[in-house]
Length: 201
Image 1 (cartoon, rainbow, N blue to C red):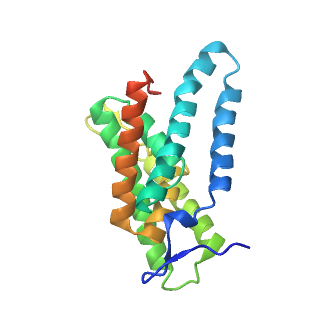
Image 2 (image 1 turned 135 degrees about the horizontal axis):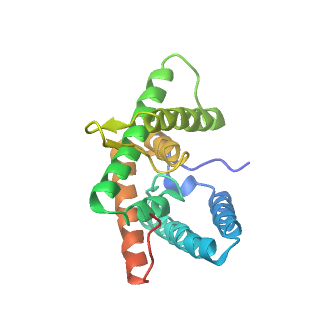
């Protein structure tokens, strides 16, 4: 078993300690699932931006890890955030903000639970993802009523993305994770625009 490289003096695993083969295989699985879901030509065309974003997100995440030693909140996260940035500005900002708030709330819950429970290794990762999943579902169930006829549903990005971000907040640090995630997502989005990519709305 390969032990993760430790970044002294913090004692935290660095971004380079990520198991890249597993991350790549997992991301390719998600991309292939999206491609397989496109049984019709229209559905396949809708899945293309997702596959493109995941691939670009992997490349940018690898570049951040190898050059800056920073993780971008999960290998697939920048791609999904980049897709969300293709929405209208207000909707995009709201979606990304809600995602970060859910991740931050999960981070806080885990910090509190760590005082009373032994949370480490795979157990910690699973607990973080479960807490983020529950908080995300709770947020989805609470529409923001603007007036009697209008309500805004607050939706984070996916069910797993907030948990992945919170996991790296715990490992790497809050500021480092959020800043690297935002930079990587913007880079992926700019590349998609340059390549003529379209956002999934």
